[in-house]
Image 1 (cartoon, helix red, strand yellow):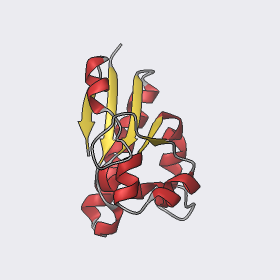
Image 2 (cartoon, one colour):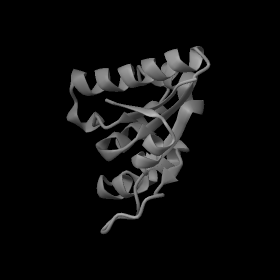
Image 3 (cartoon, one colour):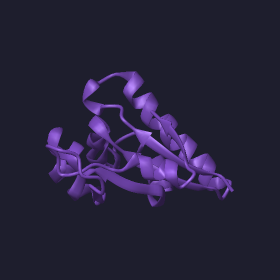
Image 4 (tube, one colour):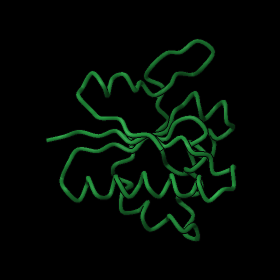
Length: 125
């Protein structure tokens, strides 16, 4: 069985259709892989951590899809949330803040190399 880690980097503050499209495509892929009973983890990293507060808003167009894949969310990058001013929003949204890899000058980031070590494919949006 294949394993896939999907990383969302797109920034909702960009205000572009492209940013929303990247988010939707990341969640489409998570939904498809989940439907096929494959192992999938959805990760929010970089400015992508800002999506947390958007996705839990019932008025957001991606809310229903998010609810369908929320059990695949591995978390949001702790160091990224700090850098992009999203720590409180990430916590309020109920996302886990993950800082399992110490990186100088940060509170830690999600260790993507761990996914490679464990045989995951990494797909980025």
